[in-house]
Length: 617
Image (tube, rainbow, N blue to C red):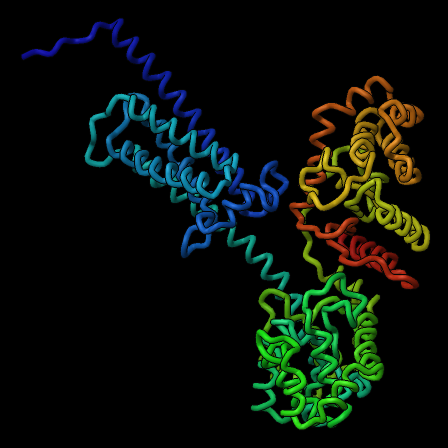
């Protein structure tokens, strides 16, 4: 039987319909690949949370950091797989204009099953990530067009499948190499910091006066460990066990203890009480030392560490009186000493010393007077550190006299120096003041309605005057007003005028350049008490004084362009995971602490940054 042959007109119509389906399907693939590519850049740390809708605690964050956000075994973001998958399909689709091979259709069907699974996960989790949705909806629509497309007679080896596999492999390879390079750079930075820390400990000689009231181990120990601790601190407990194991196998190590409880009852420098029994535990240990000497102190210290600062797990302070008697003390006498001013003075002495040394968390461990920076990723363990320091002491590698720990000011500068450089998204033109060659780049994340932001900017101005170091300054806004800052937790009260001032600064830069921007910037900081009374006309008049067109300024003030600039600042603050406002960054490195009365820490950081910049140039 002969089949009916299509007319040339019908063939042309069929070809046109097929071409249209092919083109629409290609656009859907490009959309899916683009959305997956954006998430890939986020996974590689290029975009971070600067993406709208991808900040901390967002749907995007919940998906990417959840159990379905990475590939088991490889620990790659799923977006890597998606980008490679859709890029391969885009290349393979070029061979499908005349029809789709069955093999490729089955590949697309497998892909759509995964898309449906991810959509179900997002709905169940209540996390509708916009970029993930775009990827999977485009993929489902693409699958529908593939099913409508004519079949192509299969060949022993489908060229489209071969092209897809090759493209998928190449893209995956490049993503893997890129991710490995990123990880290796981070590892090199961390390793360099850890090596420098190790060298300092190996070359140091402990100052005899830097020790606790009680000493475990020989006075002439080669390795002298001083630990500022909190009996309820989990990491303190972990390192205590390691130290005891080390001392069981070595006879050239000593340990002394100082207190830094994370409890406002005895430590006024902590922002809140995290460990409710920490003060009582420290008081009990010191009372035992007063009444029973060194042996009694270490007996209570060991007991409290073993029980994580509680006198009996789950019973808090109820067991203390009977426990005192079990330890061989008179109950009434012990309780009186424990509550005495003498014990409180001992704890206060340690807490004040911790402040002088710039200690903000526990445990803080000093080895021969040098802080061991155990939190650096990839840092050697305590066993390795002690062994290597002991070997260095035995070999006579000390290059300095007795080493006192760095002061708080020295530590603040060192913390900035050791911070990892994190690339900041560049501020638009006109928003960085004094942007001249050779100037140290300084970024402040703050709020025009915040007196602390003003204080920081005043300190920066004074530091620049004192040192002569020119700075290129950008104030990136994080308004304390919910009207324009949805990231601001609801527990914070609005600061009236904060949003309008932030928008006014951006609009002034666009309408009148740096001069108008600086005029609005300076006025806002000098008149914080009146920001809530300012209106658009007031801000327009200030910008107009520096050449901005008032009508243009007012139009920009409520424009999408300015709103995007404000949101970019807010998202950048969150992307960099800042926790305090204001936040100071010098040469793209965070300066975690900048307030220190009587010590010019900002000046020191600016001078060091300028010297480093000059050496690099």
